[in-house]
Image 1: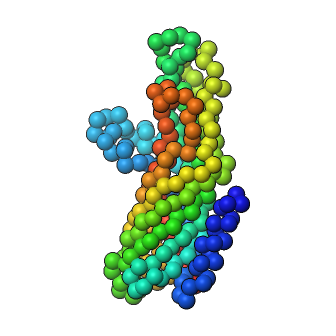
Image 2: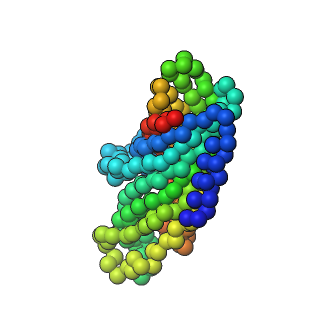
Image 3: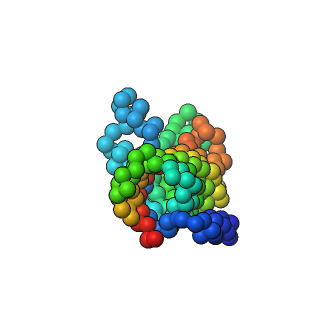
Length: 224
């Protein structure tokens, strides 16, 4: 947490050192749906039930600064608190009855502090309305994520305590998207590319990873 605060102070200090900048607040919705789901829809392995399991009332909120680097290019550091939930049903090889699988539900609750550092460009500048595109690295820090396994439907002799996963303290990803500015408001549509926040002590064939990629819709208000 000290590293997070130190990073935030550096970003905001750099913002205030500039001649012109905007400082604001933002909040929005995180969807746990990923681009990989599109291929699964065509082959029938992904349906409305899966969508219902993955679309939760996830959200993010925080601060951002908009720093002009010229007439077209700008830098936008952000400090966001994010919550995301995912539910999976998977089969795990039974360690007692060889050759059989156990069906188990797993629930992942992501609580993270995200620090995107975005570089953007104005594609269309109509003074009142601006169209932007942006991309940049995103630092993600764990802020109390958890993973649990429930509802064994078969193989009751299996001990779920062996499925303990360790949450990574930090990770690095990439964020890109497009946005529209209307007066002091900024509406963004983004996609995060980031690795799994969980270290899996079992082999990949025993327990599949949890994709952390998200589609994000956010609304910002430039206070000044």
